[in-house]
Image (cartoon, rainbow, N blue to C red):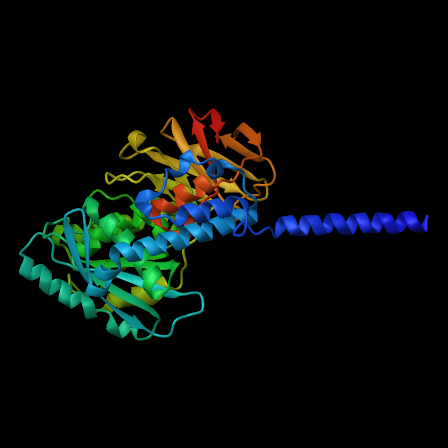
Length: 425
């Protein structure tokens, strides 16, 4: 009996050792990651299409997926530095025929988890280049006093055009994506502490950019702007401040601020724990608020982005995006104004699609959201449409990370839901 017991203990220890080795398996030295490292070692123009390589679709463990994500993120940062490193040093970015000069200054000591980034959009708009240049120069130092009391990289870009909608034209989203990636690579910015603010025409831009790029912001603040056709629905997980002079009646800016306050109040009341906002109409002040709006910067600093919120509300802007947090949609199926609402439940290991306008959507999952080692339940409006274990893959990590160059928006598991009925990997 004693010998049998010893043998049993030996077998259990051996099995635990095998499991430990499996859990701590290091793909950097063998297998999938060795193949990936060989692929990444090649110049970009010489790399075979990743989807054509067998290892890109093989199932990964959680630890393998984490290591693969690290490799891809390092490669993406190296690529960004190669493409834009000199431009960053010169403080001028080039994209698709447009030019964006920018200025930045660093305040405070760098926290262990990385710096904050404040992107500050100048006023002006549909006027002369000289006036917009002057507004850009003003924006560079507008909030120095507020920044002196907090930590972060304060970055003011100069709009590439001199049109009335200079801050919400299509190319702006791409420039901001470059700025965020480069600030992370060069200044060790924390991707979960990126903030957006803007004054006057810059405020017009914040009204538009905050909801349509909400998955990039920890919080946003709009100063003295006009929303035009923007909707606040996408701000479900993005704290949003509005500062307008109570006497700023040009273009009904003060009235529009009150309208948005009512909209955000209703949204917050109907979805407890979401749509955090702070709307202030400053008494006896017009378009210039005498820097009373500067309180928005420390207010924003209270918040960090959650890149994988449990509930996502996505209303598509007329500047289309193919992904938003952990939801994606094929570009050819995007509809302006189309709305998708979905949520996941970690305890139940499920995703429920509440509302969806497209016959194809993608659900992107990582191990912080759900347990990918157990069956995952997919529902449409509460009805189960799939329940199974899904795989992690190199290809999924590459495709999701490549979209925005953000390791926090990288997903090893991507499911395609067709007609709200069928689920495919």
